[in-house]
Amino acid sequence: MPLAHRCFALVLLAATAASGHDPERSASNPNARYEPLVVPDRIVLTWTGDPATSQAVTWRTAALGHDAVAEIAVAGDGPKFVANAERVEATTQTLDADLGKAEHHTAVLTKLKPNTKYAYRVGYGGYWSEWAQFTTASDEPEPLRFVYFGDAQNSIKSMWSRVVREAYADAPRADFFLHAGDLVNRANSDVEWGEWFYAGSHVNRMIPVLATPGNHEQSGGRLSRHWRPTFAFPTNGPEGLEETCYFLDVQGVRLISLDSNRDHEEQAAWLRKVLEENDQRWTIVTYHHPMYSSGNGRDNPHLRKLWQPLFDEFGVDLALQGHDHTYARTGLVTTADNVPGGARVRDEQGGGTVYVVSVSGPKMYKLQQRDIVKRSAENTQLYQIVTVDGDELHYEARTATAKLYDAFTLKKQNGKPNELVERIPE
Ligand SMILES: [Fe+2]
Image (cartoon, rainbow, N blue to C red; front, side):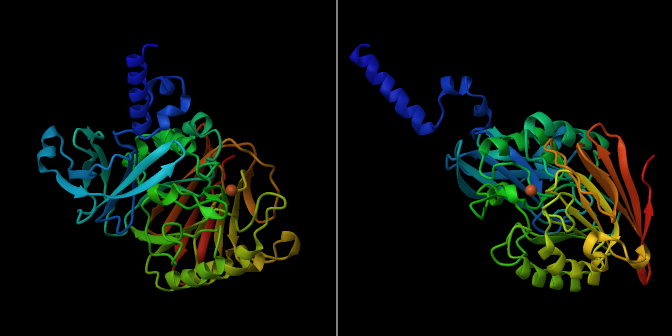
């Protein structure tokens, strides 16, 4: 190669190394689609405050040091609403991910009107997302619907996409999607986080996400470096557990995320306070490791010792869990059921919490049968649709092909424990 050409090639090489982008390498690299670009991706709605008046949106770009803003307006039937758009500056966290340095930007949209459809876009300069839409929550108790997923974790693009999309087709007006941990398998794999966003694609831009971290969102005993830059959750948990242990209230329901990976005692003290001060009609708790494992040798007795008495004392209605890669849903259960061998010694209508283990991804474990479990499954990918309407909570578990697999209703009774009405399909 002539010297002049060689110099040009070296300059080009240096330039592509500096920008982190090599078109030839990208064309033959299947993971290149998950590399950060100047155009926003991994756009996800979450809540950090009151879902009736605020909405957080987080997105990713390559680390180029540009400004990052969201634009928001009340959505209109015609295109002219964009003229009313207001700009909200984002805060930025830099993440040195394994596919390249990225910036994760969060804009918290505040002073919104309850029960109102807004349109927003995110970006900078000439690089914008499309306009997407969301509806704020009501500021009063109103029917609330959400979808709960157990572990996605493995072959996320290949095998989980169909589940999250079937759930969206089944509950397109859901108020949020809840993920009970192990969203990915390798905590700091940028490709796996990329697959998670590929699977959920535009749904995450329309329906807020709530998530609690699983053991696979840990690496070397620490939370995934992706977690806090990727999601904006409330920071009202104990110090050091911000955005993993938190609560928020929406339409008469207190939703609590506990981080079952660490600091169980500290969270018990926090949980007591959060439950004591709870003025919502319903209480739903999510955490990853199940109170009652549905797999052999996977027991979590410390959770039953530290957290379950509080669930009993304050009447937690529903516990949504993951980790065991099976389906197992209990009846009403309290600490009184924790006798050796798991035999039932108590009248069921004496109150308690319904505990669910579920799995949405393709990794499957063997099921350990327990007396307290009313409905169980092996080798089945599922999603669950929960609707809270006044004094009733309706729960449905559906398989990856949208078949109804399990259902029950919880009924609030004044001054008495919940009534559980089984609606298990034939
Ligand atoms: Fe797990």
